Length: 74
Image (tube, rainbow, N blue to C red; front, side, top):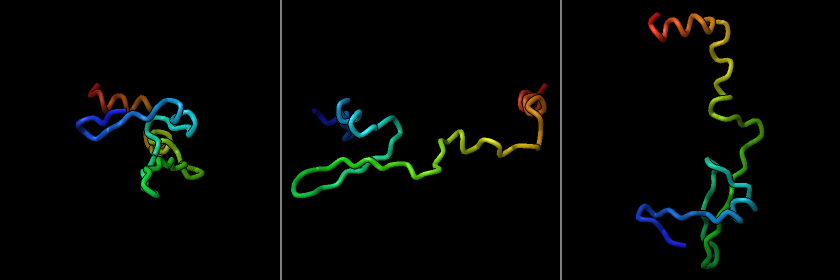
């Protein structure tokens, strides 16, 4: 495995599968006894994705048609 000029490496698919690491997963590296450990951080219960976290924030203020008219300048 080679390190890129930006200091990046590719985590092999078998390790990503074993740890259930998906894109945007939080991981950490630790040094223990001369070895480097890759540790996956599990999302806390109730954690939501970046888009689902915004669901409902504008509820009741305007209709979709009103938002579209205002943002498009119609």
